[in-house]
Length: 263
Image (cartoon, rainbow, N blue to C red; front, side):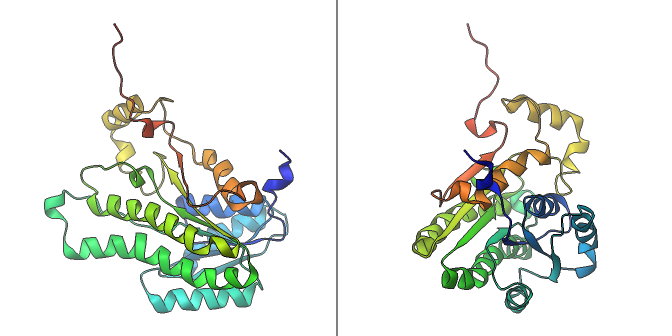
């Protein structure tokens, strides 16, 4: 397979939630592959780091920071309008912005539920809707919804989060069917366990980390660099005949394997 299939030169991408963690990594990865990038976050000043990082690559990529709160319809509309003004075409959307609240199911409040679902499910739908209007007109688009292992697994203590990530998987399939005739692919990139800002507190518990590694067939958590290939595959023409799918990058944890003694 030619490496030019993964070349994003001349493409423009939007990455939501790009100020830190996986979103920041995704934005830099797309820029390295040739794309100009629009990065978004709730606070514009928080994007300075990723803007400096892309500029420091010395590749001549344009990077435009835009304010976006995915829980507010007006904010989504304003971002999409500004993005179209900054570039005459948006080719790639990485729906990455998300949040989590860790609580026992009996302790989850009405507001907890709304905050998580509004951010992780309703927001990505309306961001995709706003960006897809231009993609439909141009007959081309790559939409990557960021899910997680919880798109297919359930865990205690994060019920609303699991519901939102399971919903992202279903939403991905629906949008793929809806927008496929317009040349738009919609896929879900679902990471397993990676050490990020969102999971940092969990990784301070060595007993938990040991338990986790024991349940992963590759016997280790992932390095964020190991998501680069999957991201570029879904963002590029290398995945031109793939849509509606959930791509799990999880070290094999979704196999459900557990340590067993073979007699």
